[in-house]
Image (cartoon, rainbow, N blue to C red; front, side, top):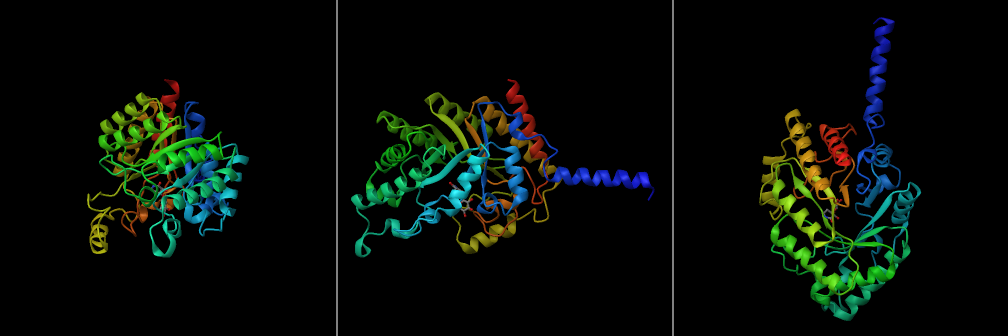
Amino acid sequence: MSRSLALVAGAALAAAVVHASGSEAPALKSLKPAGLRLGVALSQKQSDGEDKAALGLALRHFDQVSPENLLKWERVHPEPERYEFGPADRYVELGRSRGLFVVGHVLVWHQQTPAWVFAGEGGQPIDRATALARLKSHIDAVVGRYRGRIGGWDVVNEALEEDGTLRKTPWRTAIGDDYIARAFALAHAADPTAELYYNDYNLWKPAKRAGALRIVAQLKAQGLRVDGIGEQAHWGIDDPPLAAIDETLAAIRASGTRALITELDMDVLPRDPDMWGADLAKKQKIKAATNVYPQGLPDDVQQRLARRYADVFALFLKHDVGRVTFWGVTDADTWLDDFPIPGRVNHPLLWDRDGREKPAFAAVAEALRQGARR
Ligand code: XIL
């Protein structure tokens, strides 16, 4: 190889390497409208600084962070008298030291909550007074510890059935329908400066959206603080329909509460309507039929994913959502590899498994530019 050719090849390689680390691409947060927070969920490996490549991308592109798991009840309060704040402390400190808006997720949920929380004396169901006392000590301890440092909390997560009625969770059974209001009141008392959110999935469905709007209207009628309604947005590459998303964002905005997109990812694998409720045998079958991109995402699907991201970002900007948070940095992080079907290879985010930008990255960058110009 001639010297000049070798130089060119070397420079191209260096450029590719720089590009793979994300440092050549424009920072997404530099493109967005000022009123929009743009964030990402960090795994503990990332907030602990062990996964430096992904953390580098997160710090470069986003101005908000969410904790994927480390502030959930089972992590932070595994036993009645034992709190484990180490990973959460490091997460909050990382966010604060970098000037990021730090979100807390989540105070009240029926998942990832230890069994002891819902256990009463001698195997009896827990009574209302005990449940309220446990709720209060947890919220006081966790929200109080990060008072003034965690900027906003998902107070209650997934309280609704798909038809918009209240879900029968152990919290509701023990306390009654007012467990939601109690949680918001306790969170506000523990940190009056923190924003407080109601968070759920499938709010693009009219009945469920109506349920969320009803919950928040009732909270506000009681004088409680609510700053946002979070749609998780664990969506597919083809569904939900854009019109449904459009209507939901319009309805939330019209209600006077800010809409937030709190856990965005796009499942690119074929979606079987039964996959969420299937038993193990059925899940194996669905896995065999739907794990169609184990070696990487083909170009045509990359382009479809990019268009899908462009389309939903256009709606986010049209309706002035307060925040968009991706649920993971790169495809190597995605929970969708194991949910709802374990052991597949999904490709839902803006960077591939090696940290390279996908066409979806450029699509989001362009949508943000256009949104900022409007
Ligand atoms: C998921 C995490 O991404 C996984 O790592 C974990 O195993 C299960 O929880 N709705 C939520 C999030 O509010 O907390 C969930 O996160 C995804 C669904």
